[in-house]
Amino acid sequence: MPSVLNARRVAASGLALGAVAALSGCGVVSGLLGGNVLSVEVGDCFVVSDMEQSLSEGEVTDVPLVDCEESHDGEFFYAEDLPDGDYPGEVSVDEQAMEICEGQAFTDFVGTDYMASEIWASYLVPTQESWDRADDREIICYLETMETVTGSQEGAGI
Image (cartoon, rainbow, N blue to C red):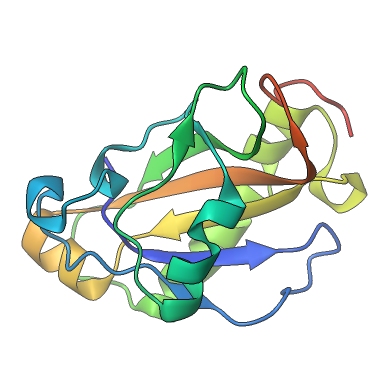
C-alpha cells in the first residue's frame, strides 16, 4: 500500500515533462490524511487531470479513482517493494522507480517497449517520512495516456 510519496511524470521519449511534483501525505495512515492515496492498488484507474492542481501545489492525499470502464487517463500497472533498511535517498529511489516503471514491467503490461510507446510511465515512491513513519517501501507505477480511454491498457501495444 503506497504512501504518498513523490511522483514523476516521464514522457515516452524518456525525457522529463516538466516540474517534479512531490506527493506528500506525511507517511501516516490514510484516515489521518483524509484521502485514499495509501490504499491505491495495481489495476486502479483514475483521471490524472483531476490531480493536476494538487500536483502543482506539491501535495496529494486523494487519487481520483474511477471504474476502468469509465473515461480515464491513468492506470496503476505495477508495484514493487524496496528492500528494508535505511531510506536510500530521494535520488536513489527515483532512479530505481524509473528503471522499474520504464523497464520490463512496462513492456510486459503494455506489450511494447517503453521508448516505442505512446503511453507515459509515472510513479509514486516513498518519501523519507513515509519510509520512517509508515514502513512504506512501495514503488507503484502508473500509465498515463495522451487521450482518455476506457478499459485497461494491458496489452494495448501502443
